[in-house]
Amino acid sequence: MISTLHGILLILYIIVCIFVNVVVLMQEGKEAGLTGAISGAAESYWGKNKARSMEGGLVLATRISGALFIIISLVLNLNVFN
Image (cartoon, rainbow, N blue to C red):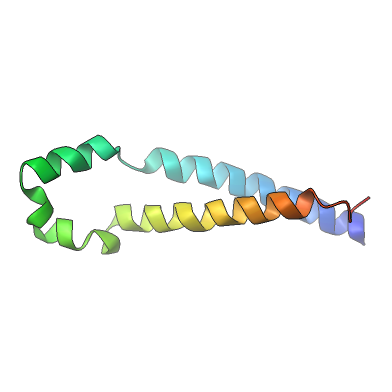
């Protein structure tokens, strides 16, 4: 029972690791946001509603998957499964 749970958590951990890498690589760099702010693009419609855009979704996905990564890492390092 416990080894089955450990195996499931390990597979989930690998999936989360791959997902974190993909989501982080899909995000645009901070330099792109800085040049947009300098040229005044931050006051546009897209600058105000960034949380609803794809970039905002990627930031949220990064935060959630990062939290899952840390939680699963801590659970896997407990000595409960031995």
